[in-house]
Amino acid sequence: MSYPLNSNVEFENYLQQLKQNNQINIIMYANDLVNVRSEDNTESEIVTTINKGTELTVVEKLYNGWYKVILQNTINGYVSSEFIVETVPTYLYTDEDLYWLSHVIYAEAGSNSCSDKLQLWVGSVVLNRVKSDKYPNSIKGVIYDRKYCVQYACILDGNINKQPDERTINNAIQLLTYGSVLPDNVLGQRDTIQLSGEYGTVDGVCFSYLD
Image (cartoon, rainbow, N blue to C red; front, top):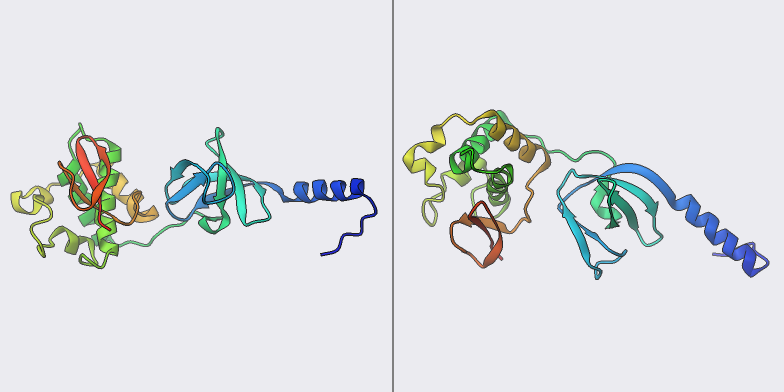
């Protein structure tokens, strides 16, 4: 590229103008589970991780395909442009999907002592299993899967048939609309560590990876 510039001052002015042209202020959304980093590269520190559908403000478009972003008016960081989109990403789902996902979440984490976070993680494991080639490819199939053993005790004790409350239904709708809030290989949940390693614990329930 050639620059019609006759001095270092003109060149600096050109770079400043170019930077101003790249400064924007638009709302965009994460299209997956996305790491927000401290600098515009994948080697830099992860400031935070955001879920699919999370709203962020893009304040600058960088030459290398990264965006400088602000989250919740307080968190500054950088995200690769391939992971954010201009419209809220959503999934299509059926009434049957909602029925089974809300019922299994309520059976597993319907108590008042269970947090919304636990409900979202329980539902996310189900959705991750649906996507995995190691499990059936439907929500109902995952719930009733007995390939290795009974996966959900609620199908034995009848709790799967309990009517979920409004909170649980809303959390199920959120998951079905925007997708799992966990990495795809988080496929296990129980009171003790299982599979290949622990991802995290919520309300005493351990969630684990499967490599």
